[in-house]
Image (spheres, rainbow, N blue to C red):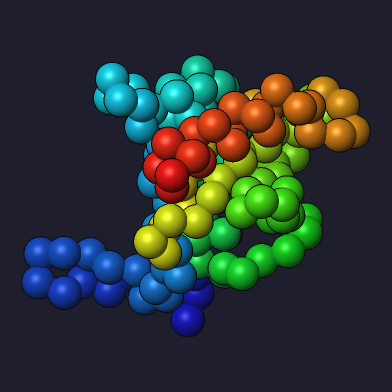
Length: 129
């Protein structure tokens, strides 16, 4: 059965193929969701690509490259190729069988910049002390 096929159960529509993980956005103490806000400020095409890649991880976990890669210390990244030869990364961790989206950014160098990793680590500690 195709990935996009859906079946109706009462008033609820469920995916035939079930998610192995559920993605949720990291939330600050003040209630903001910085990764969600960052994604919403991107172009429609970029949002669609990043959303598709996050969904691939949700349905296909565990996944490796090119969609997902470990960063160490319980952090992972969703890897997205965007229009204009740009690269986006969403850093996430696992908590209670959920992927918590901690930080998102446009990657401009070969290595993941230390400040990007530090911010993700800080947010991970807040949800998993």
